[in-house]
Image 1: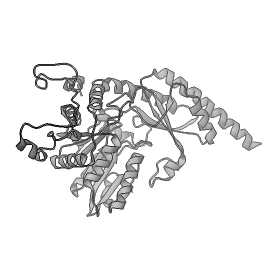
Image 2 (image 1 turned 120 degrees about the horizontal axis):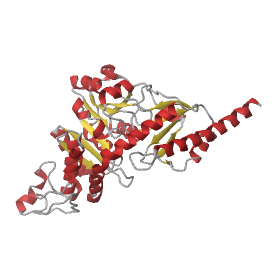
Image 3 (image 1 turned 120 degrees about the vertical axis):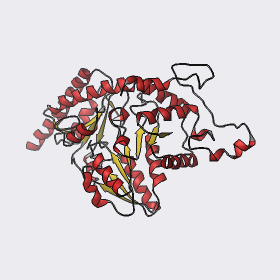
Image 4 (image 1 turned 60 degrees about the horizontal axis):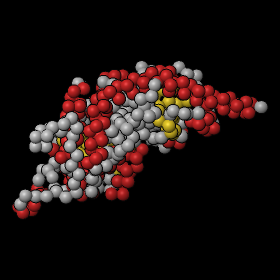
Length: 399
């Protein structure tokens, strides 16, 4: 995607502001929307889904961001909500009802799973599927299957899904598909172009880019789906701050530059870790050694800043030593910001899955914009600390 296509839509146009033009979008803060006539007020709820009725569904600032994300997603419609998790939950609630069957990838974001299984209280039947299932998902689709949830790659173990194959089986049976595309962003993956019905982003990640806001988006080419989402957004009061919309607009201006740098650093770090004796496996889709690398190469135009690794078997104290040795890398569970992060997922996380592809503790690295040689040196020292505890533990066991 041309960088001009990304940054130019963020300008405040002459048409928006009565003769005023600038390089930054205008910020309209409003709770109350006023109307010119009584008839306009009475008819306000019959306005189109993107019309202005009350502050909860947005102002021109919101519409500007939604239009911009829709363009990046190659979609006709988009709405923004207060977080990525809100986008996930809203989509599920808007599309599923009692008696429906819902298929969700076993590698999906943990809170997405949690919310999906809460829907069983409302009579929705939820079933996990193997993220590597491909077109064999046809055998799991029932007459009452309403929605298939995808996340590619998976949020911790990074399995890349055969999205075209799954979508083909879903469409042949009239089943909707939705995908969380936060890892690749619209710059490196275009799932709606592959036939996916709804594309979800955690705008808190690469779009915002500075770890200082929460927002999610849902894009689609289906006006009926968009209208249903907008109506439920209004009913649930899922309002987004105009100021946060401005911050995401500003983040979009630099997203291509940030993500290009971060993804390159992440791959160099992954290649370093792949050759380290303390590392058993590096889970990065862009590495040729990764199990679903061919699917990544066929569908994506780039890789994100997030990947995972599995270390040699060791006691928890060795992992504590590793994390305690970090100086520049912070401990936290997010990605897409300027600062590098590390998160730890105990073996039980994978044991709780129905289709685990890893049966060991997993460390997830989110690479920021720091110098990659600094990060590589830090990881090397941290792995030395891990090794020291591991050797000491082995010596005790052999005594």
